Amino acid sequence: MATSRLDALTSWHADWRNLRVVVLGLGLTGFSVADTLVELGADVLVVADSASDERAQLTQVIGAALHLGGTADEQRERVEAFDPELVVVSPGYHPDHPLLVAAADDGVAIWGDIELAWRVRDKVGEPAEWIGVTGTNGKTTTVGLTAAMLRESGKRVAAVGNIGAPVLDAVRYPEGFDVLVVELSSYQLHWMRGVSPLASAVLNIADDHLDWHGSAEAYAAAKGRVYENTRVACVYNLADPVTRRLVEDAEVVEGARAVGFGLGIPGPSDFGVVEGILVDRAFLDERRDSALEIITVDELRVLGLDAPHVVANILAAAALARAAGAPLDAVRRALASFRLDPHRIEVVADRGGIRWIDDSKATNPHAADASLGAYENVVWVVGGLLKGVDIGDLVKRRAERLRAAIVIGEDRLDVLSAFERHAPDLPLFEVVSGDTEEVMQAVVRMAAAAARPGDVVLLAPAAASMDQFRDYAHRGERFAEAVAQLLDETAPEQATAPEEEGRDDRGTAGPPSDDPGPAERREP
Image: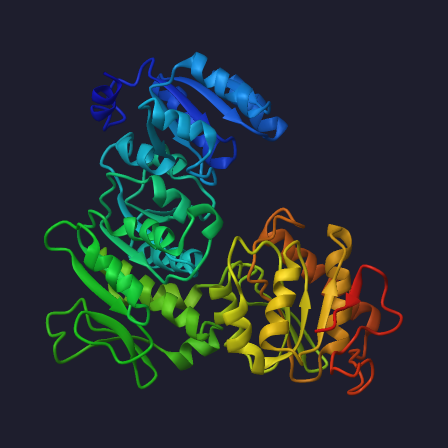
């Protein structure tokens, strides 16, 4: 009975009244789900381990029931008493969470916020087209670029999803949109069904969130869901064969095209680079023997957008925007005014020949690899929550570029072990304090001691931040603050370590003798 009723709920204007729904989680996404369902007339119970006081109060104000905290047994008893017909789960809940397992065992349907948003996307008239973007890295940059290109073409566009604004908020926006560019995490994609985007992209695949998905294969399969039912263009990475396989395996709408992007010379139906010029060889009739110029790498260099991984994101975004009808002049105008998000290869200081760069958004090895590859001599700030991923291959690949490494975070022993295996002679520093107020102060003092003119001090942790910081933005902000404080204290000269001081008989540089307590030298 419940299943047949849910099958009919494919519009905002369907009869959602009195549908009993449990919403798991009360972050931004969970609240948007609860608020939407209450507006639709459903009976809603929100179950969450924790929530801000404001959000908890608002949940009850809008008319949803709330069960906050409690033991697993107490939560299960409350859900069973409610007898839900549907569970809508926030990103982050593992599939093996007891409440989800119990719901599945009882035959209760489980949706994510994306499926709900797709079903009710017609609230304010003609539904917006959707463009789905996922990948291990570069999602937010590509989403922002795609939205900017479409905006320059005259469309009403919102960048939503994992980028910060819940999709359901955009669906309910009174004036509506022409296009939603939706950043999709692997968590959201795991639960996604039934969505039929105009265009979609998997930017890259590298091991990440293995603790959540259980295996690399399951993680990749979740990412590949973005291609399902795509109608116009499936955009994939020519340098990443996994993304091509995901396109080949997807059930798409007949007529949808595979469009590749890469840093080399493109084939027909691809985007690429020819003699320093970014080109479109996909969306033109004469694509077998000609291409359309987008912008030059030299022009991107002036804009600060010439890092290889950023160029790849630009090509992917251009492919998505062109699939949605954006003319080339709109693509060019968007690039001329585009700026990378904070905490993405952001220069926070440049003094004494040393650049300090915040790439706190590099929360996995794949992102950190792209960042490290852009610089020749690096003092690398690395560590945090590894999410089940081994960074050994990354250390091995980039060891020659490293002047030193400063290791932070809860999983730092695993990071140190990777250096011991693959870069045993590299100077290592370990920040042993977990105090948020002390971590970055120690990091920048050690970095200043290790760095030399011409070096980059790079915060690209290859790990999540929640062990010591609220999020990656908080981590980056603390880094920038600590850099500013250090440079104020040491102006006008930049402190650097003497070439041979502080080395032990195994070639490991230690911190200066007056370095305060929360950090220590780590011998390989």
